[in-house]
Image (cartoon, rainbow, N blue to C red; front, side):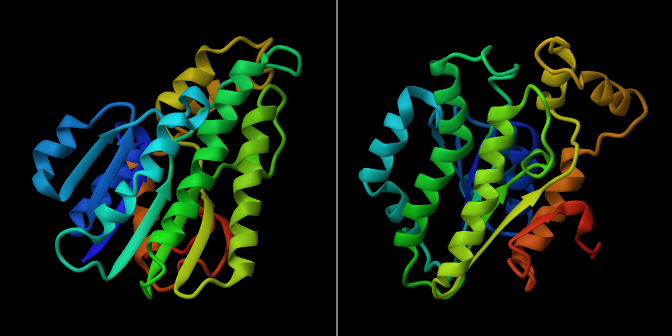
Length: 251
């Protein structure tokens, strides 16, 4: 049996990733601020859900949950687990704005959700799966990890840090562990709607994303999710530690 933890499964790419995994017979534990009633109705007991705000309170709720051993118990429970997957998908653009516009609290929340939570989960996942011969970690990255955007300094920095975390973990050569940080492309999600509603003062390149939306340049999250899961479950996962979904071969 394959088990997967997916963060931010309530909507957007996270929902698409969870759905694609469930359709392939993978048991999923979704971690998000709220559940996904549609997925639960379609997949029943194959989907477990935990209401958890990964970015709130400096990560106190996540730390408490991890310290309780619940992650390891879920991975061990039920039928024998042959392989395990962690998908660090949850993320936020906030705070958007030029340096000096953010505020300490907003920066702390953004870094917690985009970076600290994935690192905490990856550490706990590695420890809980040390007896498995097949365990995989997918960081959902962004082109902003490699291209600087004025107004996205916090988002760019946290996604770049995820990329380098993947490189460092890969260099550690943990037995049976593969890791990759993959940028999914520009998707038609609530995050894109947030970009289009932002002010030019806070995000000077907003017009570029307005144009992508108007001219059909946004990919469907369902398509990206299916392709990411194909890669995640395939034999070549982790061969490139950082990559872009658009650079992967179409199966």
